[in-house]
Length: 244
Ligand SMILES: [Fe+2]
Image (cartoon, rainbow, N blue to C red; front, side, top):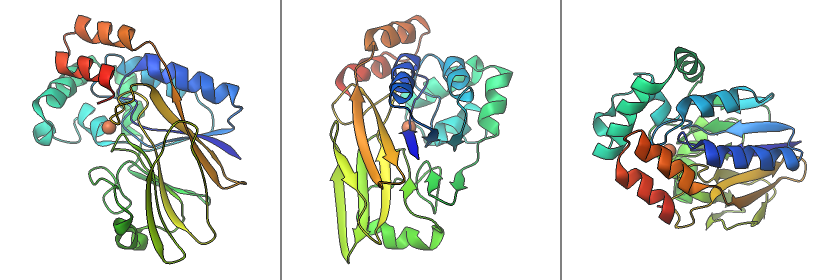
């Protein structure tokens, strides 16, 4: 089956629309969303509405989603992220809140495990290094793991006694090795942090066991204009121009 894998939308509707169009053109059959649908950006309700219409959606919540519905204190967020959380709390509709509240922190299917951060601590820990794989293994029944949170497209794996970490570029494809324990991060749709401002997402073919990253241009200036119009912090708008 072909899965569209995406994460860290962060209320960026222009980027999300481009990614969902790409998934449709690619004839994706099912979706994997790794959390942080809202926070930072100007369109929380629009983004919730878009992904709530997807059939065969597998989704978990991220730390920003929990903060937006009052289930996580934003005191540990930096001041700009906190300002955006406070704006989001006031902006989201009751319907969007209900959708976000229904997302769990971890999802296990017969084919994969889904979290925002790590299997051990799904909503707050970053999965950044292959050295974490043996620590996470007791918390994983089914590999691969799909995760987000770092906003970096990445493959971490342990295969044939070897640990490997790869940051992934546009169109780069990773094919699973026999017996590997792997975590795949599709990068961020709405706020990339690898100095490439294009939206990021991935396709996972569960038969071919391949994971491929794609970068897609979107109307970043339109998103920034909306952020300024809504009074969101200028630094959050500006960082979209730099992929940071
Ligand atoms: Fe995020």
